[in-house]
Amino acid sequence: MALADLQPVARNDAGSAAVVGILKQRFGERFQTGQAIRGQHAHSTTYIPSQLPDGVVFPHSTEEVQEIVRVCGEHRVPVIPFGTGTSLEGHVNAPGGGICIDMMQMNKVLAVHAEDLDCTIEPGVTREELNTYLRDTGLFFPIDPGANASLGGMASTRASGTNAVRYGTMRENVLSLTAVMADGRAITTAKRARKSSAGYDLTRLLVGSEGTLGVITGLTLKLYGIPQAISGGVCPFPSVDAACNAVITTIQMGVPVARIELVNALCMRALNGYAKLDYPETPCLFLEFHGTDAGVREQAETFGEIAAEFGGGSFQWTNVAEERTKLWKARHDAYWAGLSLKPGATSCLRMFACRSRDLPNASTRPRKT
Ligand SMILES: Cc1cc2nc3c(=O)[nH]c(=O)nc-3n(C[C@H](O)[C@H](O)[C@H](O)COP(=O)(O)OP(=O)(O)OC[C@H]3O[C@@H](n4cnc5c(N)ncnc54)[C@H](O)[C@@H]3O)c2cc1C
Image 1 (cartoon, rainbow, N blue to C red):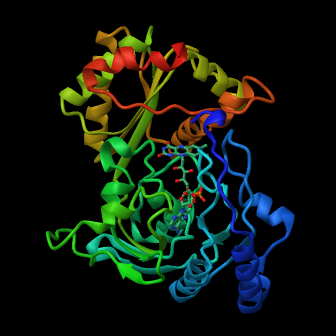
Image 2 (tube, rainbow, N blue to C red; image 1 turned 90 degrees about the vertical axis):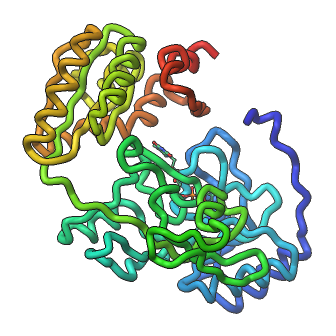
């Protein structure tokens, strides 16, 4: 969206003033109207200028969210759910004012069903908090957008990340949601069962709805066993085309890669400068394989052979956790590294999807437009 496309939205000042009065009385310290806190809640990772809500409220339960939504509904005042504010396109801006519902104090892991590979959580739990909580269970939640976002926010933006090639996105990993609708009713979209063909698929309607259809107050998520062995590495290529063709062949050959990400030469330069690394400054693929010791070795060797066919440099891979963490931290920092190329600049992200065969052309296009 261009800045010129931003349309003014009518405010309901009388309604807002009434709601502010009611929420102040009901929530006390958990309802804030200071300029600074309202500013923080309209300031996300975006080039779009902040538009402040009239107040920020911190609920502790589904019932409290229902109360807030009902009061706002009666006075025709907008509500804006808020997770960690990392979204990239001005999602949490309040162009018509209204009440920001900050979900971060609803941050409990309610249940982990290790034998069923799922867990039920409140929406303010972040992806890193969930994985820290799960550490001793041998399970993990794989969806990893660069930011340590709330899982409610990730469901709302249908987040993906570097693991999407093997584990999918939030769309495939949310089994059920509890959400408060615009009229204040709370619904739970499904049970924990993995297969259900009964009724509309409301879970997938709400996932990706960016806070416009309901406020998510609970989620049941799929979990996965931490693989016995993980190996990963970086492979340089002479061109973006060559790297893309290696990706296509790898997928076509059925190598079950867990992560595969293309980083172009400019971005590699940015990463090296930002994170003090010394990767080759040519197009590179970042990869990770999950499985047994023998399985990951075989996958890495097969990929190395495919890379060589397309002129790729030697594929150095490692099983050492610290080295892999360093590698993926660098990839996750790509956004900030990009900004560091031009101090003072903000970023405007472009996303695109294409067929595998169009990948080589498509992946060079964003630089030209
Ligand atoms: C450095 C960086 C790298 C990223 N990389 C990726 C990536 O690789 N892949 C990817 O898919 N995304 C990526 N993202 C985007 C990321 O997925 C989103 O920023 C994140 O999912 C938003 O979560 P949040 O908790 O910060 O939500 P917020 O930013 O607070 O909110 C986002 C939207 O969700 C709504 N919302 C929040 N909580 C709730 C709730 N409980 N109920 C209903 N609606 C709610 C808000 O109203 C808003 O519309 C990246 C972001 C950053 C900053």
